[in-house]
Amino acid sequence: MRAEFIQPDDPRWKEFLSKVTHDFYHLSEYTSFAARHEGGQAVAFLAEEEGAGLLVPLLIRPLPENLDAKIDGCDALSPYGYPAPILYGSPDEFTTGRLMQQFVDLGKERGLVSVFVRMHPLLPFPQEPLRQLGLLVQHGQTVHCDLTLSAEEMLKQTCQNHRRNIRKLRKNGFTTVRNDWSFWHQFMEVYRATMRRVGAKEFYLFSDNYFEDLKGVLEDKLDLWTVLSPDGEFAAGGVFTVTNGIVEYHLGGTAEKYLSTAPSKLMFSDVRNWGKEAGNRVFHLGGGLGGKTDSLFQFKAGFSQDYADFFTFRMVLDQPKYDRLEKKWRLLSGELKQDLDSFPIYRKAL
Image (tube, rainbow, N blue to C red; front, side, top):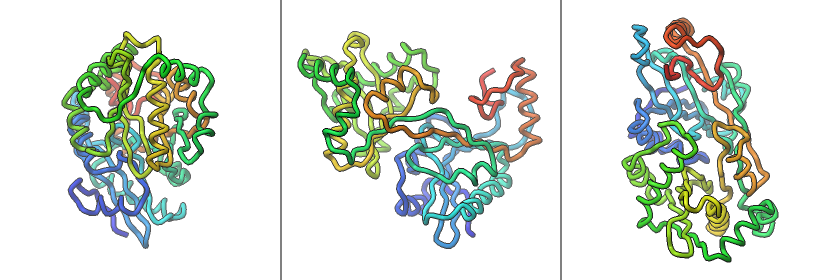
């Protein structure tokens, strides 16, 4: 078996992806992009054995300095999104377990204290090998549209309220445009205003530089969709990606002036129709905030009743160091209760 952590410019990263269905989150360019904006070093763990392989995109970070714990080491996490471990060669659970064990062994050698991985709802990974090595946590479900269905079948999956709103938007003169980049900066402003309006964390208030860098990295894999009012004003917009037949909703927002008309419903409807016409196989709308079955999830579920489970995977590779870090964090924070939403716990803001 060959196994090691590789850099984004290693040709084996692209070679691996050429063998397997993947999303844009798995691209070496995206992992490097995430490192620039989230911090850490962009790497992938690569292991191969007898016609089977495992790839795990990661950001490796030094341990937090604010704990003043004086502990050597680092930890790793997935970039933002769904950059889950992926396999080629359809290995059985035993072989998958061997590949994952190499990840554990080399991670320990590298000094990793903990690993946090976001799984991909639409790219299944054997669960038992993960459960044997760490904790698999379900956070709810995400919504996707099967683009292989006929247009009539997709319309039937759309709830009556959404259908009524979409008809009204069209009748009143609202339209969508794809990839008119003259609206790019307006989109950024409306996106951030939307995040502030819903009380999103500071992390989600992405800068102009983030969006420009994302556009430069993904190039023709990134689409900007805009909903225009009858007067040609920016009403709503979203950025979407297209990779290997997977259309992903990445980020979006609605201008406050047009909230009552719900223009994003028209956008999602038109993206779904375009995605089908362009020959893609699935449109992934994502889930609710933090995986919850909230109003955002219900809005997305109005377009499809096809749901997929969303999991994160957590491993502690150095228990003594993890325990020391957690103890120091609890001492400084005064927090005693367990929190499954925060891993590693010592990264939670003080």
